[in-house]
Length: 163
View 1 (tube, rainbow, N blue to C red):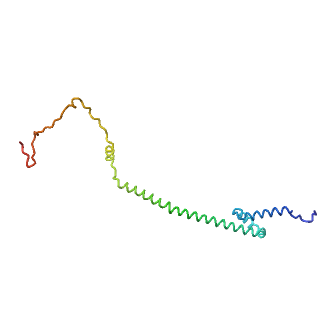
View 2: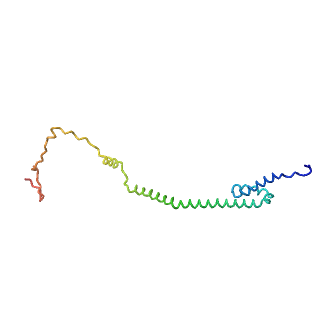
View 3: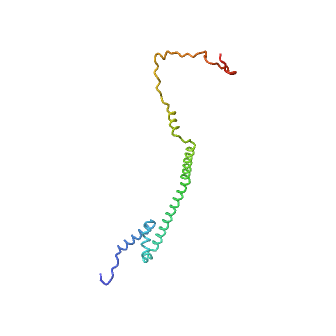
């Protein structure tokens, strides 16, 4: 080769670069790759003019990905509100009612005095007292009640009169 002619890139190099661009065209629908390609092409105006279709395709992919992200965020916010209204709010109301019911129940119960609470405990748990053992003499004792009263008698009609 003569030193006066500038060297042209080989045919193999051009095809490798063409394959790389073709791969970028194929992967332009991937949002991560499209974002990188847009960033690269935005920095170099000459390459962007050369591959304008790739640039526009990647920009569209980036816009669609952003719209998809916003749509997912809105759906998630809607679901959070829906769950809050359908599940969390009724549970909170039930919780407030239960807590309020406990306050009412506490107000209904009379206040306990220390003396009455100890007597209630004694009444609730009766103590067993030890009964005296029966002796042979007390077991055979018969208690007779007098049928005739020795004291004054009341008839119920007037003043008591002794007999």
